[in-house]
Amino acid sequence: MTNSLQNPPLSSPERDIEALIEEARRRQRRRRRAISAVLLALVAITLVALDGAGGSKRPDPSRHAATRRAAQTVALPGSDTTLLLWPAGAPIFGDLPGGGRGTTVNVDNLKTGKVAVKRIPDIAGGDFPHQIVAVGRWLVYNSGRGVAAIGDDLTGTPRILGAATWFVPSVRGHVLLVHVGANSTSPASVRSVSVATGARGPAVTLPHDTQIVVEGTDRGLLLLLWRGRRSKGVAELWRPGHPPIKLAIPSEDITNEFTADARVAAFGTACRSKEAKLSNGPTGYTVCARLRVLDLADGRSISFPAPRGTLGWVSGASELDTALGTGDTMLAAQAATMPAHDGPTRLFVLRLGRRTTSPVAVPDSTAPIYSRTAWSTSGSWLLYQGPSAQLHAFRLGGKSQTLGVHCCQYAAIVSTPNQTR
Image 1 (cartoon, one colour):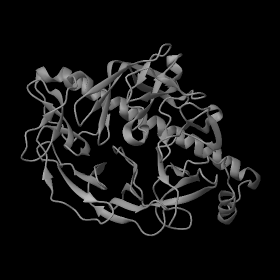
Image 2 (tube, one colour):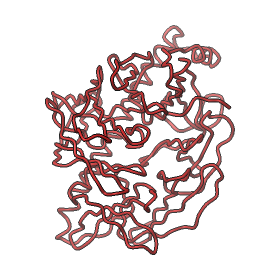
Image 3 (tube, rainbow, N blue to C red):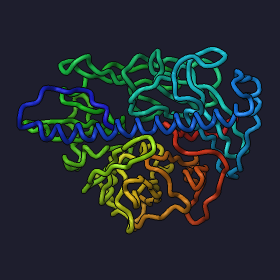
Image 4 (cartoon, helix red, strand yellow):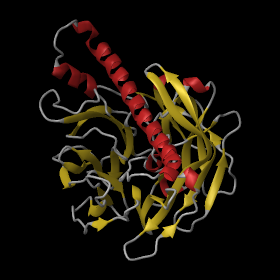
């Protein structure tokens, strides 16, 4: 998460620190470009498969719709989860066939095994901290008209929650609308908004040295700041009119694609850069000797050493709100494996509520770097990419299951409860 709010001029003593920060941002940009290139390749393969028998004729939309409606995967009994995999079609953001703006998303009902393709209206492309977030029975995303919310069944017209540069999650059914100033001297601000009702709170001006708004928590806004003569990185929980609560995170680790949800924060320590030469070009990534998970409520932390036989934890491989199981008791994390230049990873489950720090290897989980993961809404099933790029499910104490849908090189994977309304 490296979207910066401000970039003030630097004096000479600060340039080395800023170089480290900019390198973290550069790695994030390369990662996003790599994901986009993978998506384009997947779309091209899909279109060839669908239209190979039709020569150069224009596709028949009704035939495609029938094919999509007939799609089926293996059901996952007891999961009570619908999985959204976005984008399902070309990652472009203009008019769709049949009219309207937006992109399509694969909607996989894991309880029934049925797969459909639906539209997310007017979703915007860009380097945002979050693409799509589930909040209650709503999906929140950045649109061409502002931050939008639509029911998680993707029916009806989306509501605009407000104009903003982007949004970040918060607590109790809210998100934070983040407004970034036009230049380094303009203050950034946030405004809390209820996703269900659209009710907005007052605009709150952020401290001038704020670089990143990470999350809204019960103890205040989680902010990353570059502070002092040497632009030292600081992580704080901040509320207007209250003394900030400084978190025990070393300055050098704040650049390691720090990530968090409303209750915990995770970051790598003792990290180093690697580069994978993938088919779409070189992609930079960071591996870390240890992964620290910090409880934002009481300040306690637990440290997980990288599993034996791996190069280290892949820093920032997935958003924490999808990597955490329900109740913040389990965390899915990727570790890089050899050869480093190919960028393979293996998935592990970390149990946060126990004294043991031994990671549990997820079977059949070798996949390309930055493959997306998610948990079922009950938090018991981990959903991930397995062999032949197929969606797999794993539960601690059990075996992995193949679900028979293509996965997981997507910009976003979101779990929602099965529809009952």
